[in-house]
Image (cartoon, rainbow, N blue to C red; front, side, top):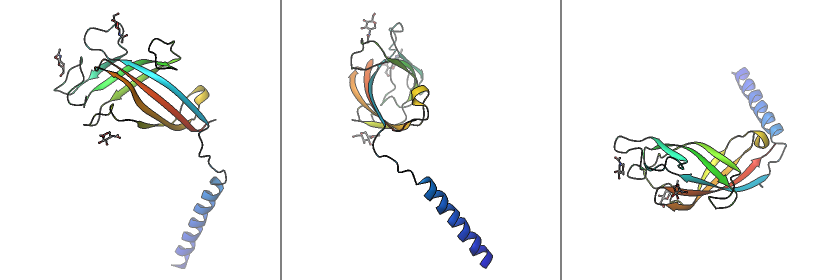
Length: 159
Ligand SMILES: *[C@@H]1O[C@H](CO)[C@@H](O)[C@H](O)[C@H]1NC(C)=O
Ligand SMILES: *[C@@H]1O[C@H](CO)[C@@H](O)[C@H](O)[C@H]1NC(C)=O
Ligand SMILES: *[C@@H]1O[C@H](CO)[C@@H](O)[C@H](O)[C@H]1NC(C)=O
């Protein structure tokens, strides 16, 4: 019994020691890097495949691939390759492209919310091992054909 308590105490000490050594470096509460950019999404609506930058690739049974499912695009999976610009003009020279996919997984209107936070959990090049938060806000929304997101990135860990 005594042995068990001792082992437990030792283990506890070890835990505390580990947490105090890793706690030596105080974490900064201020971002180490801040960026703002815009990304432009032109949805495929049946006739614009030449300049569409996103396409519905999966939709629920009651939807189709030329329009967001009703209600709230719930169940749609969209693949995108969107230009990124430094200002809110679609025709500004792009500084990069956002490529990936997004899915609508809630039965409320996600685009109409003022802001949404998503986690930055890594990156490559200058953003190797970066961590932080990206705050998305809908900057423009035109008839389910075009929308523009403003992205405010605050990184709290930079290398
Ligand atoms: C896509 O291209 C068509 C025809 O070239 C043009 O009328 C339309 O404005 C373009 N859409 C956007 C969002 O640029
Ligand atoms: C696709 O769905 C939209 C919205 O539900 C509807 O207006 C449109 O007619 C549908 N298109 C086709 C080709 O079924
Ligand atoms: C978005 O806004 C709606 C209505 O204001 C709210 O009910 C919902 O919780 C919000 N969602 C998020 C992810 O903030």
